[in-house]
Length: 516
Image (spheres, rainbow, N blue to C red):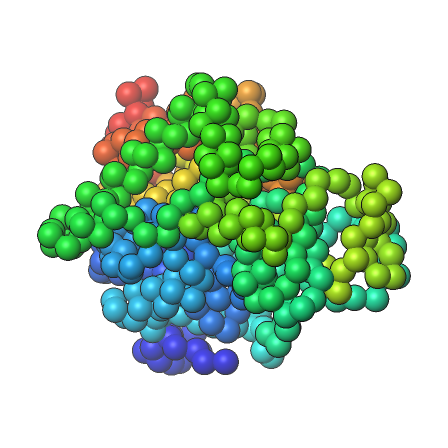
């Protein structure tokens, strides 16, 4: 394990270290957040605490065959470092290298402290700071420091395990049972009968990848998911990058892809039957004649009630056409010695079963959050602009989109956090607290999809309200106006706790301005 933090970032006299900003997580969001803090708040001291021993988060942890982005890289990459790779849908290794190169390019990798898992954060209004307790994952030693602002970039997936249903008879099964995020490095699937349980993004990635490795693959799903094939090269992007400099082609392609993504989502919500017809026609062109699309690729819900799955270059459809992969739509009755018996009575023989059955979610990496002695239950709180919790000062969350590239929103949040920090520095205020001016009694789930991994954990996560700034729109154009083009001073963000007793105390006026 290598800790790359600069030695002069820490106090040498044994005093408790204090940072202006503590970023939690060195994955996609954390690396982006560090760039914004380093370039927009040059005065700020900061560090990134990463529980694992390497950079990259999801893209370092997940090593299953074929892992790739399920969004285009022109929006999945950072706005400050436009994607220059050949593929519009990139593989995991390429994405991981992009993250490492980004962190190295601006030196933010030197501020990462690996093997530091934050277990507790306690806010004191009197001191206007967080006291943070981290645990060293190599020694178990506890590390205590303070920070003025806490920025959680852990995402919402649980990294140490996925979700596995309580399958009857699993202990009787003699083959290999694998979770995708715990993929064995030396697994040989050539000539093996592999059953992939699931129908989401992981499953539709694994099925063609395992088929290319020589496996005979069955995707077993309880119910279908909407899938769409996209090319992993974008000819418009290739041409634009050939004739235009990066400073022009990068933003142009980003906005072009955002417009297409938002347009498709809005059309799906307003004209779902039309979108269903379009998706079905595409399937009819890509699957063998007479294929049972109604059973295997026609969900019972509308498009974008759950996330749409991307099939890169139509590879899964090609594997089905070639006979190296098949889809079975049925329920698991129980595991047997040699495979799976289905509710229909049919049996699937399997040397290997892969449980691509969804992710388990974990809020803020599982840390305890305490504000002035009271423990915060996230499920009881509403989010301000989808990035801060009501009543929790000086703490932000990087939560991306469920209907578009994660990075689009995490970029906006990082920029907004820096604007908050700059405003507090200029105004002399040490505290910013999202505070609704009514009871926000109407609440809805934060993430807004009906996917199983979300509905299973809705009781653990914060909520959203039904009006701005407490409503999450899942719309980049709306968020861009709300977060990039609006003032950080508004009627429901209270700035307080001046730097010295002689400084004027801020109060919220009816107009939402800060009065001396």
